[in-house]
Image 1 (cartoon, rainbow, N blue to C red):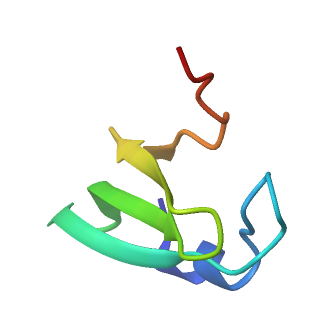
Image 2: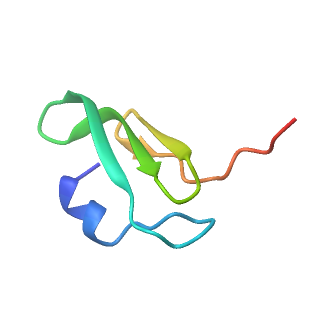
Image 3: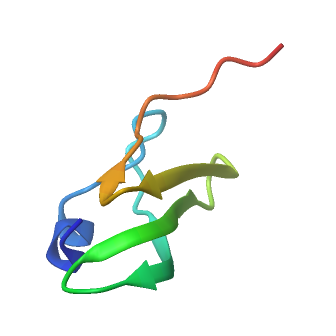
Length: 58
């Protein structure tokens, strides 16, 4: 994922901004987390792809 995408990505639940935590970065962000403070939801970034699909609660 390119770090510049953070400027346009928003939480799919509330449309608030997301905070980025990088765990692995090469040319682009390979592993990390996008976090929404408003919803308290983490969206993982795996293999450079952010998973922005809200997880269903059990």
